[in-house]
Length: 283
Image (cartoon, rainbow, N blue to C red; front, top):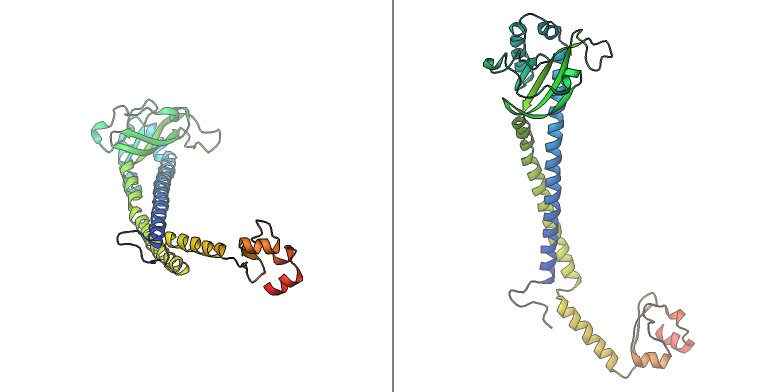
């Protein structure tokens, strides 16, 4: 019996090590992917809340309410929109009439034109948030109605009529950039856990090797078969017990001499009904 496998043959500990590492790699890949998806969705949620909060603040500004009801809304609203965009980091801020006529826009040539996306429910006094493709590109945006008395959607029933709406957005690419910024952290954490897992797998595989005395599965099978053949070939009765007096092995001669049935392995000596003489010999 040779405990060292032939050259090129994968050992038991080697198989266990590779299996542990592959399982760990698959688990970490799944966890890392779910983590990245969660970060991406959380980033989108945060951007949606951000544009909604800023748009709500702009919609209740007295300057915006008064500007939309002025003879020339663009004269006062466009400079105001530029200042707000610069202060809040918004990629665009459009203030429009209920019919969709722009009074502000980052591209000054588009002021006075009709918006590229329909106002939607804001003309009925409802808020809207989502992702749309506009003149500036794909953006995470919020559309908030502007009421004649300066009220808000959450301000009760006394809000007056809708005199316009605010559409504020941040480029989707900006949100994607922030989400991608977290990828190195995810990869670093995953790699660290993988390295620790590989080290742990190596330790476990060495412990298995020590427990099996370096024997491969074929060697262990051969050893057991040889032992069984030897014990069952001798004429003498052989009865093996552990420290708790549980039967480990009974060969046919011992079974015949003691009158034992099959399947006694694992039972205690006291349960076998042995004679006092036989019990004393085993003890």
